[in-house]
Length: 110
Image 1 (cartoon, rainbow, N blue to C red):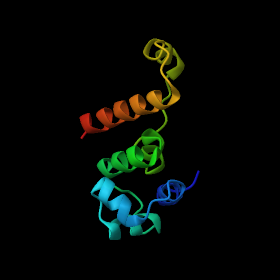
Image 2 (image 1 turned 90 degrees about the vertical axis):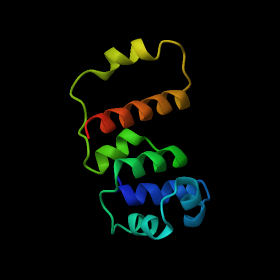
Image 3 (image 1 turned 90 degrees about the horizontal axis):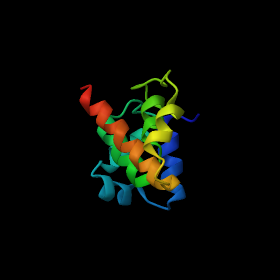
């Protein structure tokens, strides 16, 4: 898996956003975003990762793992998935819900 900065840069370019446009969307300064994409910032705050995952359609949990904030769960996630997602959510809705849950868990542990 690419490092966090590479993932963010790749996603930003896929969405055809400039650093300035991403700055406006997220409130994260252009110089900081540039340093993050170039590997000078290797562990951005969970808050920044949340904003970037939301606006760049990235998996928040994966970014948190790649930045070293969380480790993969050892429990069987499929057991819980069937309960949570039996209402026929779209893939996009499922990603959003998972990202929100990951953010809540991280915020709770601060």
